[in-house]
Length: 127
Image (tube, rainbow, N blue to C red; front, side, top):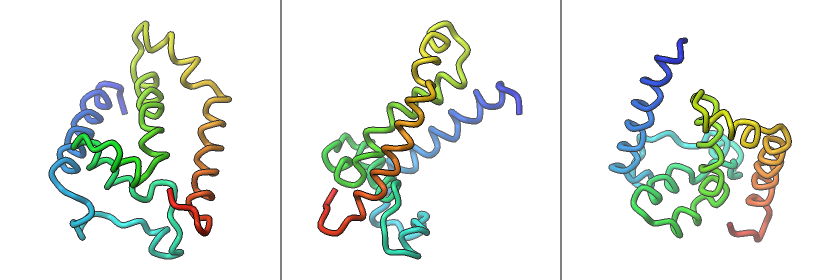
């Protein structure tokens, strides 16, 4: 796939998803996808609550979004930087790419992701 299609397709899909989650409250929409990991195990995956958190963020309810999925809300800026520096070949993106996509930062993100997965499922821990 050429970069031209990515530059057109990704923003169109992103805007469509944002409009969907702005207009539809996932707490009351049974037709939106449910987490299969939670359905099968009863445990929360690292992304559980992400749809509700996105809906809350789009409505400016940051505290509520943090309550749905703390890790995802905090990680979104980093993930957006990774996507931006991957797709953009401009001078600023090239300057940031070695920092944002550094191997150790990626490993730290993955480690925090796994820690979040375990900690949010510990008995008595409410995050």
